[in-house]
Structures are given as structure tokens and as C-alpha cells.
Image (cartoon, rainbow, N blue to C red):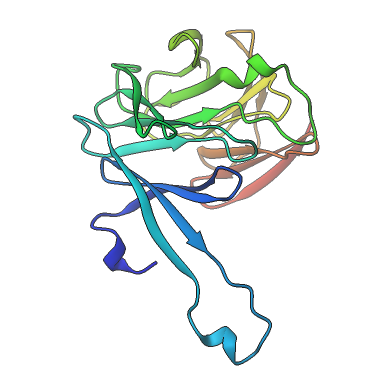
Length: 234
């Protein structure tokens, strides 16, 4: 995708709707793109550019200068896309109806830097209602757990240190735990149904800015601001 496709920097790209589309944000605009990747084994034909990508739909997040995060389920069919912006709001888009479905203003005291859905895993089984939960994170305002059915905050998590850096957050494949980074050189694991942290994981050289669960085993990967990755086994 060349520079001529986007007028502003691209953020939050991900596959969507069982790899059918690509979702991304450009400024305050959410874009849905269709793509085609040609798999060619011919050594001569493979140099010809037969792959393509084109916009299908665009949605504007009102009153936001920029979309700071978005999330959508890719492993099963879902029409909902959740976006957060510099206006401190959370907006739910229904791509089946091609419209905005709901807006929650002032979800944090500052603009949220990450939104994370409970997407589950093919290696675990959860109750269907568990997939309605998602987490938002903002600098200086902890983590908040939301229910998409009521569009209300149902729980708040505090204990990790997050005053300056946009520390990442992840929900475990089983849907029982939330992991997040911290500026005190630790990673924290919260139990979904408890407000206090369950485990504090030290041993990092710098602030932990990103975390990710292994979808098939009890492993947590952390990334620090100095570019180091570590894997922890529970």
C-alpha cells in the first residue's frame, strides 16, 4: 500500500471478519479495506504486482482529532468495531448497518491509549456472554472493564504504575485474567472478577509497555521500552 492511499499516518491495522478485510485508522477516520494476495509459485510471474487493496467503507469518529485505538474480533464473525479517540470517547460502529451504534463520552480522565476485547482462543472454551467484555487503559487512570451490552464500566483495576508511558494490556485466552505493563519495571496480572492484582512479575530492565498471552499455553510475553522481550510461564 503506497503513501498515496493515506493522507495521514496509519494506526491500529488488523485483519477483520475472518481475514476478509483489513481494519485501520487514519487520523479520526476508521477505514475498512478489501484486499487480495495472489500466491504465485512461478518465478517470473511473482514479480508482477497482482496483489491489490482498496477501501470499502470509511467512518468518522466525531469530535476526535485522532483514533488512538480500535478493536474487532477476527476469529469469528462479528459486525462490531470499537474505537477510542483523543476526545476521550469510545464509539461502537456497526459495520453491518454502516453506522455508528453508540458513543460513550469521557470513559477516562485522559484519552485512552488502548482498548482490548475478550476474543478468546480456539484452544479454550468460554461462556458466550464473556465475549461482551472489553478493557480500556489510559495514562494515570488505570484499567476499566466494560460490558458492551450495557455500555457501562463494571470494574476498575488499579495497582500498576502508569503515569507517563502507554502501558499495554491483554486479556487471557481463557477470559479469566488481565495482564498489563507498568512503569515500575514489572508486569501485573489481575483476575477479571477482582479489583486487586493477583500477581506482580518483576525482573524487567525498564518500563513494561506491552504484554501478550500465548493463545495455546500458559505463557505471557512482555516487552520493555528498551526493546527487550521476555517470556514467563505460569
